[in-house]
Image (cartoon, rainbow, N blue to C red):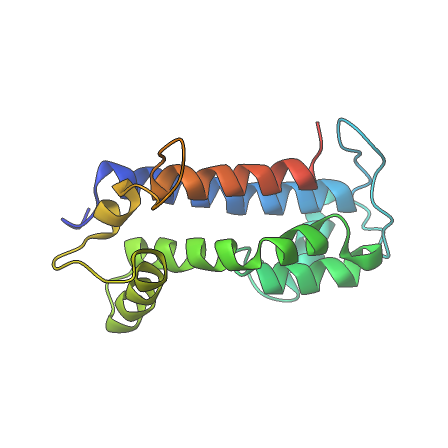
Length: 171
């Protein structure tokens, strides 16, 4: 594990990976005619004979489907479900925060100049400056400016992802 990975960065990465797994699983289950605990199953345009077939269909000829870009998942949802529901409206409504989360995830997972530059852009938007020697974990442990009660950026991103998940699968 690279030195820049702190407990906050590791926790964030686990949360983001869980978000991706949630998107895939809920998408496939809805495509397989499953209903959420509360409400009705979404109207499907496709009727795969099995969950394995559903996975193949959403992968569109690739080894697997990517779930990291909210815009790509929204587009996929519009191909398989009426109005892309429940995915597209939720993902579009949370587009900025999900894009920031993806950028932070990439900054943890990849050590490239471009991922660092994108991460620093997020930090500037949130903090107005990039403190010297700031790590991804250090940023995630920083308190959100003006938030009452005080919460860290890690808590903010995890709460937003959890809220989006509850909108996709109401319980």
